[in-house]
Image (cartoon, rainbow, N blue to C red; front, top):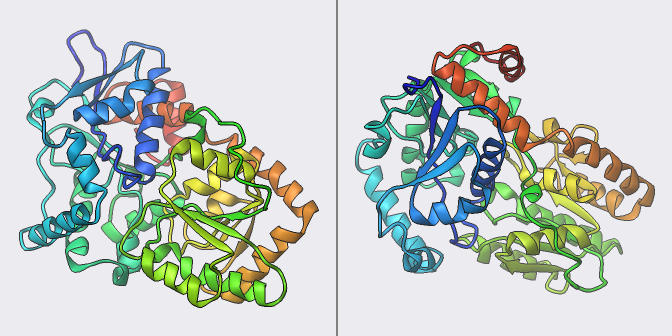
Length: 415
Protein backbone atom coordinates (compact mmCIF):
# COMPACT_ATOMS: atom_id res chain seq x y z
CA UNK A 1 0.00 0.00 0.00
CA UNK A 2 1.23 3.48 -0.89
CA UNK A 3 0.27 6.71 0.85
CA UNK A 4 -2.39 8.91 -0.72
CA UNK A 5 0.26 10.99 -2.43
CA UNK A 6 1.81 7.86 -3.96
CA UNK A 7 4.87 7.70 -1.72
CA UNK A 8 6.34 4.52 -0.31
CA UNK A 9 6.19 4.50 3.50
CA UNK A 10 8.33 1.93 5.29
CA UNK A 11 8.43 0.97 8.97
CA UNK A 12 11.76 -0.37 10.23
CA UNK A 13 11.72 -2.16 13.60
CA UNK A 14 15.17 -1.61 15.22
CA UNK A 15 15.26 -4.71 17.42
CA UNK A 16 18.41 -4.09 19.40
CA UNK A 17 19.02 -3.24 23.06
CA UNK A 18 21.17 -0.09 23.05
CA UNK A 19 23.69 0.78 25.69
CA UNK A 20 23.88 -2.65 27.34
CA UNK A 21 27.64 -3.10 26.95
CA UNK A 22 27.55 -4.53 23.46
CA UNK A 23 25.02 -7.32 24.02
CA UNK A 24 23.30 -6.52 20.70
CA UNK A 25 26.43 -7.41 18.76
CA UNK A 26 26.56 -6.19 15.18
CA UNK A 27 22.81 -5.66 14.82
CA UNK A 28 22.94 -2.21 16.39
CA UNK A 29 25.70 -1.14 14.00
CA UNK A 30 23.75 -2.63 11.09
CA UNK A 31 20.60 -0.66 11.93
CA UNK A 32 22.66 2.50 12.35
CA UNK A 33 24.22 1.90 8.93
CA UNK A 34 20.84 1.23 7.36
CA UNK A 35 19.49 4.47 8.85
CA UNK A 36 22.51 6.39 7.58
CA UNK A 37 22.13 4.99 4.07
CA UNK A 38 18.38 5.53 3.86
CA UNK A 39 18.75 9.09 5.18
CA UNK A 40 20.90 10.00 2.21
CA UNK A 41 18.53 8.67 -0.46
CA UNK A 42 16.73 11.10 -2.74
CA UNK A 43 13.09 10.89 -3.76
CA UNK A 44 9.78 11.11 -1.92
CA UNK A 45 9.76 7.72 -0.18
CA UNK A 46 9.84 7.80 3.62
CA UNK A 47 11.43 5.44 6.16
CA UNK A 48 10.25 5.49 9.77
CA UNK A 49 12.17 3.63 12.49
CA UNK A 50 9.61 2.51 15.07
CA UNK A 51 10.95 1.66 18.52
CA UNK A 52 11.72 2.72 22.08
CA UNK A 53 13.15 5.96 23.36
CA UNK A 54 16.57 4.39 23.89
CA UNK A 55 16.62 3.09 20.33
CA UNK A 56 15.66 6.57 19.13
CA UNK A 57 18.59 8.07 21.02
CA UNK A 58 21.00 5.48 19.61
CA UNK A 59 19.83 6.18 16.06
CA UNK A 60 19.48 9.96 16.31
CA UNK A 61 22.92 10.77 14.80
CA UNK A 62 22.07 8.70 11.72
CA UNK A 63 18.54 9.98 11.02
CA UNK A 64 17.52 12.83 8.75
CA UNK A 65 16.39 13.47 5.22
CA UNK A 66 14.11 10.60 4.23
CA UNK A 67 14.17 8.98 7.68
CA UNK A 68 12.51 9.72 11.01
CA UNK A 69 11.71 7.97 14.28
CA UNK A 70 8.37 6.98 15.79
CA UNK A 71 8.64 6.33 19.53
CA UNK A 72 6.58 3.57 21.11
CA UNK A 73 5.52 4.57 24.64
CA UNK A 74 7.28 1.99 26.77
CA UNK A 75 8.79 3.48 29.90
CA UNK A 76 10.13 0.18 31.23
CA UNK A 77 12.00 -0.89 28.09
CA UNK A 78 13.30 2.65 27.68
CA UNK A 79 14.69 2.79 31.21
CA UNK A 80 18.41 3.45 31.63
CA UNK A 81 18.18 1.61 34.95
CA UNK A 82 16.90 -1.47 33.13
CA UNK A 83 19.68 -1.21 30.55
CA UNK A 84 22.32 -1.19 33.27
CA UNK A 85 20.60 -4.08 35.05
CA UNK A 86 20.54 -6.22 31.89
CA UNK A 87 24.31 -5.88 31.62
CA UNK A 88 24.79 -7.49 35.04
CA UNK A 89 24.89 -11.18 35.95
CA UNK A 90 21.47 -11.02 37.71
CA UNK A 91 20.06 -9.28 34.65
CA UNK A 92 21.30 -12.02 32.39
CA UNK A 93 19.78 -14.56 34.77
CA UNK A 94 16.41 -12.84 34.39
CA UNK A 95 16.72 -13.11 30.60
CA UNK A 96 17.47 -16.83 30.93
CA UNK A 97 14.39 -17.34 33.13
CA UNK A 98 12.19 -15.51 30.64
CA UNK A 99 13.57 -17.70 27.82
CA UNK A 100 12.72 -20.82 29.81
CA UNK A 101 9.21 -19.52 30.43
CA UNK A 102 8.74 -18.85 26.72
CA UNK A 103 10.02 -22.34 25.94
CA UNK A 104 7.09 -23.84 27.84
CA UNK A 105 4.64 -21.99 25.61
CA UNK A 106 4.16 -22.26 21.88
CA UNK A 107 6.91 -20.76 19.74
CA UNK A 108 5.08 -17.90 18.04
CA UNK A 109 6.44 -14.52 16.90
CA UNK A 110 5.23 -11.54 18.89
CA UNK A 111 2.54 -9.38 17.27
CA UNK A 112 3.61 -6.16 15.62
CA UNK A 113 2.85 -3.03 17.71
CA UNK A 114 -0.48 -1.31 17.15
CA UNK A 115 1.29 1.84 15.97
CA UNK A 116 2.58 -0.22 13.04
CA UNK A 117 -0.49 -2.32 12.34
CA UNK A 118 -2.97 0.54 12.46
CA UNK A 119 -0.98 2.83 10.20
CA UNK A 120 -0.64 3.01 6.42
CA UNK A 121 2.78 1.46 6.02
CA UNK A 122 3.67 -0.04 2.67
CA UNK A 123 6.24 -2.47 4.10
CA UNK A 124 7.69 -3.44 7.50
CA UNK A 125 11.40 -4.27 7.69
CA UNK A 126 12.67 -6.52 10.49
CA UNK A 127 16.48 -6.25 10.48
CA UNK A 128 16.88 -8.66 13.43
CA UNK A 129 15.86 -12.34 13.75
CA UNK A 130 13.26 -11.68 16.45
CA UNK A 131 10.72 -10.62 13.82
CA UNK A 132 7.01 -10.09 14.45
CA UNK A 133 3.63 -11.06 13.05
CA UNK A 134 2.38 -8.28 10.78
CA UNK A 135 -0.44 -7.85 8.30
CA UNK A 136 1.81 -5.70 6.10
CA UNK A 137 4.24 -7.00 3.47
CA UNK A 138 7.52 -7.60 5.27
CA UNK A 139 11.28 -7.92 4.85
CA UNK A 140 12.78 -10.33 7.40
CA UNK A 141 16.46 -10.93 8.30
CA UNK A 142 17.38 -14.18 10.12
CA UNK A 143 21.16 -13.42 9.86
CA UNK A 144 22.25 -17.04 10.29
CA UNK A 145 20.94 -20.50 11.17
CA UNK A 146 23.76 -21.53 13.48
CA UNK A 147 21.34 -23.32 15.81
CA UNK A 148 20.64 -25.92 13.10
CA UNK A 149 24.34 -26.67 12.63
CA UNK A 150 25.51 -26.50 16.25
CA UNK A 151 22.46 -27.21 18.43
CA UNK A 152 24.83 -28.25 21.22
CA UNK A 153 25.81 -24.59 21.64
CA UNK A 154 22.26 -23.62 22.63
CA UNK A 155 20.00 -24.26 25.60
CA UNK A 156 16.66 -26.00 24.85
CA UNK A 157 14.71 -22.78 25.40
CA UNK A 158 16.98 -20.96 22.94
CA UNK A 159 16.44 -23.63 20.30
CA UNK A 160 12.70 -23.48 20.81
CA UNK A 161 12.76 -19.70 20.63
CA UNK A 162 14.47 -19.85 17.27
CA UNK A 163 11.64 -21.87 15.81
CA UNK A 164 9.94 -18.53 15.14
CA UNK A 165 12.63 -17.81 12.54
CA UNK A 166 11.07 -20.38 10.23
CA UNK A 167 7.63 -18.82 10.70
CA UNK A 168 8.93 -15.32 9.98
CA UNK A 169 10.85 -16.55 6.91
CA UNK A 170 7.79 -18.32 5.55
CA UNK A 171 5.54 -15.28 6.09
CA UNK A 172 7.94 -12.62 4.79
CA UNK A 173 7.57 -11.17 1.33
CA UNK A 174 11.36 -11.27 1.07
CA UNK A 175 14.04 -12.74 3.32
CA UNK A 176 17.14 -10.53 3.40
CA UNK A 177 20.56 -12.04 4.17
CA UNK A 178 24.13 -10.75 4.11
CA UNK A 179 25.84 -13.67 2.35
CA UNK A 180 25.22 -16.35 -0.25
CA UNK A 181 26.09 -18.93 2.39
CA UNK A 182 23.10 -17.88 4.52
CA UNK A 183 20.88 -17.64 1.45
CA UNK A 184 21.58 -21.27 0.57
CA UNK A 185 21.07 -22.26 4.21
CA UNK A 186 17.66 -20.55 4.44
CA UNK A 187 16.48 -22.05 1.18
CA UNK A 188 17.54 -25.57 2.19
CA UNK A 189 16.40 -25.47 5.84
CA UNK A 190 13.16 -23.52 5.53
CA UNK A 191 12.17 -24.44 1.96
CA UNK A 192 11.85 -20.77 1.01
CA UNK A 193 11.54 -20.05 -2.70
CA UNK A 194 14.97 -18.94 -3.99
CA UNK A 195 13.60 -15.82 -5.66
CA UNK A 196 12.36 -14.58 -2.26
CA UNK A 197 15.80 -14.65 -0.59
CA UNK A 198 17.86 -11.53 -1.30
CA UNK A 199 21.61 -11.30 -0.70
CA UNK A 200 22.69 -7.75 0.15
CA UNK A 201 25.86 -7.33 2.24
CA UNK A 202 26.13 -4.44 4.71
CA UNK A 203 28.65 -1.63 4.80
CA UNK A 204 31.62 -1.20 7.13
CA UNK A 205 30.48 -0.44 10.72
CA UNK A 206 33.59 1.64 11.48
CA UNK A 207 32.64 3.97 8.61
CA UNK A 208 29.82 5.21 10.84
CA UNK A 209 32.13 6.48 13.57
CA UNK A 210 34.92 9.02 13.74
CA UNK A 211 38.30 7.29 13.79
CA UNK A 212 40.22 8.21 16.96
CA UNK A 213 43.93 8.85 17.07
CA UNK A 214 46.15 6.05 18.31
CA UNK A 215 44.97 5.39 21.84
CA UNK A 216 48.42 4.98 23.34
CA UNK A 217 48.02 1.29 24.10
CA UNK A 218 51.74 0.64 24.23
CA UNK A 219 54.40 -0.34 21.76
CA UNK A 220 54.08 -4.14 22.02
CA UNK A 221 52.50 -5.53 18.81
CA UNK A 222 49.53 -7.84 19.22
CA UNK A 223 46.99 -9.90 17.31
CA UNK A 224 43.38 -8.83 17.74
CA UNK A 225 40.32 -11.06 18.16
CA UNK A 226 37.19 -8.97 18.98
CA UNK A 227 34.33 -11.31 19.90
CA UNK A 228 32.19 -12.42 22.79
CA UNK A 229 33.36 -15.80 24.06
CA UNK A 230 30.42 -17.81 22.76
CA UNK A 231 31.23 -21.43 21.95
CA UNK A 232 31.16 -20.92 18.20
CA UNK A 233 33.73 -18.14 18.45
CA UNK A 234 36.29 -20.87 19.12
CA UNK A 235 38.47 -19.01 21.63
CA UNK A 236 39.81 -22.19 23.20
CA UNK A 237 41.37 -23.51 19.99
CA UNK A 238 42.80 -20.07 19.31
CA UNK A 239 44.43 -20.15 22.74
CA UNK A 240 45.80 -23.62 22.07
CA UNK A 241 47.30 -22.41 18.76
CA UNK A 242 48.86 -19.45 20.59
CA UNK A 243 50.34 -21.78 23.22
CA UNK A 244 51.71 -24.04 20.49
CA UNK A 245 53.49 -21.08 18.88
CA UNK A 246 54.85 -19.94 22.23
CA UNK A 247 56.30 -23.40 22.87
CA UNK A 248 58.05 -23.17 19.50
CA UNK A 249 59.57 -19.80 20.32
CA UNK A 250 57.09 -17.47 18.56
CA UNK A 251 55.19 -15.43 21.12
CA UNK A 252 52.09 -13.76 19.72
CA UNK A 253 50.32 -11.49 22.24
CA UNK A 254 46.56 -11.54 21.66
CA UNK A 255 43.95 -8.99 22.76
CA UNK A 256 40.40 -10.37 22.98
CA UNK A 257 37.87 -7.60 23.71
CA UNK A 258 34.21 -8.48 24.14
CA UNK A 259 31.38 -8.20 26.68
CA UNK A 260 31.47 -10.93 29.34
CA UNK A 261 29.12 -13.87 29.02
CA UNK A 262 28.64 -17.25 30.76
CA UNK A 263 31.57 -18.83 28.87
CA UNK A 264 34.12 -16.13 29.67
CA UNK A 265 35.48 -17.79 32.82
CA UNK A 266 36.01 -21.07 31.01
CA UNK A 267 38.04 -19.30 28.32
CA UNK A 268 40.12 -17.38 30.85
CA UNK A 269 40.79 -20.55 32.86
CA UNK A 270 42.02 -22.26 29.69
CA UNK A 271 44.36 -19.35 28.98
CA UNK A 272 45.75 -19.67 32.52
CA UNK A 273 46.17 -23.45 32.24
CA UNK A 274 48.09 -22.98 28.99
CA UNK A 275 50.48 -20.51 30.63
CA UNK A 276 49.19 -17.55 28.61
CA UNK A 277 48.43 -15.10 31.42
CA UNK A 278 51.16 -12.72 30.20
CA UNK A 279 50.32 -13.23 26.53
CA UNK A 280 46.53 -13.00 26.19
CA UNK A 281 44.46 -10.03 27.45
CA UNK A 282 40.69 -9.90 27.95
CA UNK A 283 39.82 -6.20 28.33
CA UNK A 284 36.05 -6.84 28.34
CA UNK A 285 33.58 -4.57 26.57
CA UNK A 286 35.13 -1.72 24.57
CA UNK A 287 33.34 1.17 22.87
CA UNK A 288 33.29 1.63 19.12
CA UNK A 289 36.03 4.26 19.40
CA UNK A 290 38.18 2.04 21.60
CA UNK A 291 37.75 -0.83 19.17
CA UNK A 292 38.76 1.43 16.28
CA UNK A 293 41.94 2.27 18.21
CA UNK A 294 42.66 -1.45 18.65
CA UNK A 295 42.26 -2.00 14.91
CA UNK A 296 44.75 0.81 14.32
CA UNK A 297 47.43 -0.54 16.59
CA UNK A 298 47.11 -4.32 16.09
CA UNK A 299 49.54 -6.22 13.90
CA UNK A 300 46.87 -8.53 12.50
CA UNK A 301 43.32 -9.81 13.02
CA UNK A 302 42.83 -13.45 13.97
CA UNK A 303 39.25 -14.62 13.44
CA UNK A 304 38.88 -18.38 14.19
CA UNK A 305 35.07 -18.52 14.38
CA UNK A 306 33.35 -21.82 13.61
CA UNK A 307 30.22 -20.18 12.24
CA UNK A 308 29.45 -16.75 10.79
CA UNK A 309 26.54 -15.45 8.77
CA UNK A 310 28.76 -12.55 7.71
CA UNK A 311 31.74 -11.48 9.88
CA UNK A 312 31.85 -7.74 10.63
CA UNK A 313 35.31 -7.83 12.31
CA UNK A 314 36.91 -9.11 9.10
CA UNK A 315 35.37 -6.28 7.10
CA UNK A 316 36.36 -3.69 9.72
CA UNK A 317 39.92 -5.00 9.69
CA UNK A 318 40.06 -4.65 5.91
CA UNK A 319 38.87 -1.05 6.15
CA UNK A 320 41.37 -0.28 8.92
CA UNK A 321 44.32 -1.61 6.93
CA UNK A 322 44.77 -4.60 9.23
CA UNK A 323 45.90 -7.92 7.66
CA UNK A 324 43.55 -10.82 8.36
CA UNK A 325 43.78 -14.54 8.98
CA UNK A 326 40.43 -16.25 9.45
CA UNK A 327 38.44 -19.46 9.27
CA UNK A 328 37.76 -21.14 5.96
CA UNK A 329 34.19 -22.03 6.94
CA UNK A 330 30.61 -20.78 6.42
CA UNK A 331 30.43 -17.21 5.00
CA UNK A 332 34.02 -16.17 5.74
CA UNK A 333 35.70 -17.31 2.48
CA UNK A 334 32.98 -15.43 0.59
CA UNK A 335 33.70 -12.27 2.56
CA UNK A 336 37.48 -12.58 2.64
CA UNK A 337 38.08 -13.48 -1.00
CA UNK A 338 41.81 -13.34 -1.71
CA UNK A 339 42.44 -10.75 1.03
CA UNK A 340 43.05 -13.10 3.98
CA UNK A 341 45.00 -16.18 5.01
CA UNK A 342 42.44 -18.93 5.62
CA UNK A 343 42.66 -21.94 7.95
CA UNK A 344 40.53 -24.83 9.18
CA UNK A 345 39.20 -23.60 12.56
CA UNK A 346 39.02 -27.14 13.94
CA UNK A 347 42.73 -27.77 13.23
CA UNK A 348 44.92 -26.16 15.91
CA UNK A 349 48.12 -26.90 14.00
CA UNK A 350 46.75 -25.26 10.83
CA UNK A 351 45.57 -22.25 12.82
CA UNK A 352 48.98 -21.88 14.45
CA UNK A 353 50.70 -22.04 11.07
CA UNK A 354 48.41 -19.34 9.64
CA UNK A 355 48.96 -17.05 12.64
CA UNK A 356 52.72 -17.53 12.50
CA UNK A 357 52.76 -16.81 8.78
CA UNK A 358 50.84 -13.54 9.03
CA UNK A 359 52.74 -12.54 12.19
CA UNK A 360 56.23 -12.99 10.71
CA UNK A 361 55.88 -12.28 6.97
CA UNK A 362 56.09 -8.50 6.39
CA UNK A 363 55.60 -8.78 2.63
CA UNK A 364 52.48 -10.90 3.08
CA UNK A 365 50.97 -8.43 5.51
CA UNK A 366 51.64 -5.52 3.16
CA UNK A 367 49.97 -7.39 0.29
CA UNK A 368 46.95 -8.30 2.43
CA UNK A 369 46.50 -4.67 3.49
CA UNK A 370 46.16 -3.61 -0.16
CA UNK A 371 43.79 -6.46 -0.97
CA UNK A 372 41.76 -5.78 2.17
CA UNK A 373 41.27 -2.11 1.29
CA UNK A 374 40.05 -3.17 -2.14
CA UNK A 375 37.56 -5.62 -0.62
CA UNK A 376 36.26 -3.12 1.94
CA UNK A 377 35.61 -0.51 -0.73
CA UNK A 378 32.93 -2.76 -2.28
CA UNK A 379 30.84 -2.88 0.91
CA UNK A 380 28.89 0.35 1.44
CA UNK A 381 25.83 1.48 3.37
CA UNK A 382 24.67 3.37 0.28
CA UNK A 383 24.47 0.11 -1.67
CA UNK A 384 22.56 -1.53 1.19
CA UNK A 385 20.08 1.36 1.35
CA UNK A 386 19.47 1.45 -2.40
CA UNK A 387 19.03 -2.32 -2.50
CA UNK A 388 16.61 -2.21 0.44
CA UNK A 389 14.63 0.53 -1.29
CA UNK A 390 14.31 -1.70 -4.34
CA UNK A 391 13.12 -4.56 -2.11
CA UNK A 392 10.62 -2.26 -0.36
CA UNK A 393 9.20 -1.15 -3.70
CA UNK A 394 8.96 -4.71 -4.98
CA UNK A 395 7.34 -5.93 -1.74
CA UNK A 396 4.78 -3.10 -1.96
CA UNK A 397 4.08 -4.06 -5.58
CA UNK A 398 5.23 -0.66 -6.70
CA UNK A 399 6.72 -0.28 -10.15
CA UNK A 400 10.51 -0.42 -10.12
CA UNK A 401 12.84 1.46 -12.42
CA UNK A 402 15.81 0.06 -14.31
CA UNK A 403 18.20 0.72 -11.42
CA UNK A 404 15.91 -1.04 -8.95
CA UNK A 405 15.54 -3.99 -11.31
CA UNK A 406 19.32 -4.25 -11.61
CA UNK A 407 19.73 -4.19 -7.81
CA UNK A 408 17.06 -6.85 -7.35
CA UNK A 409 18.67 -9.07 -9.96
CA UNK A 410 22.06 -8.65 -8.27
CA UNK A 411 20.46 -9.66 -4.95
CA UNK A 412 19.03 -12.79 -6.60
CA UNK A 413 15.31 -12.02 -6.33
CA UNK A 414 12.47 -11.28 -8.71
CA UNK A 415 10.30 -8.16 -8.59
